[in-house]
Length: 244
Ligand SMILES: [Zn+2]
Image (cartoon, rainbow, N blue to C red; front, top):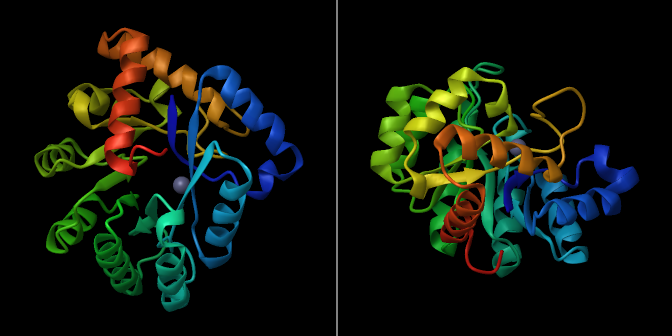
């Protein structure tokens, strides 16, 4: 299995990262993408990925981080070049902060990802339509929508655009996410934990828990678990490259 979105450099993993990664491997997770949310965090994601071969970094400036860092983050992404597998997480976050200043950094990071031939991992909490408008205007090429929770209408548009969508462990308890998963074409499905958050139960989430959503989805979508594993791995590599 491939966990296409997590934050393994998060302080919550500092005390026992080695054990967490070991548990992931034992559960059958052979690749984990760890995403940065600002300059410092992106640096950590890159450093940590150099220490642990199971980790692969995507770096960027999230819409909920300090948008004034954008120029430094763009420089960092450019310098990181081939060491990263994508640009993210980037996007829009309308409900918490109605800030128009999120838009330019989002656009600039999409453009840079295109220039570097890298995919983008997009955060779009409650901003589905606006995020899709911008991705379409910027002609983003490889797009991974993480923790997608938009409308069925947005999902239709996503499918038409050929963007990939990762399903979180929350699908186990959310009927709404289950209904979205059912209409997502097989070739666009990815799996993610968003560790340390978005656990299906209480407490810290971790990549090993991906197996729970894989098994749940296998039943929900009526696809053999091994098949679904292969399928989502193949899809993940179509987005982030064969080296993940
Ligand atoms: Zn995230």
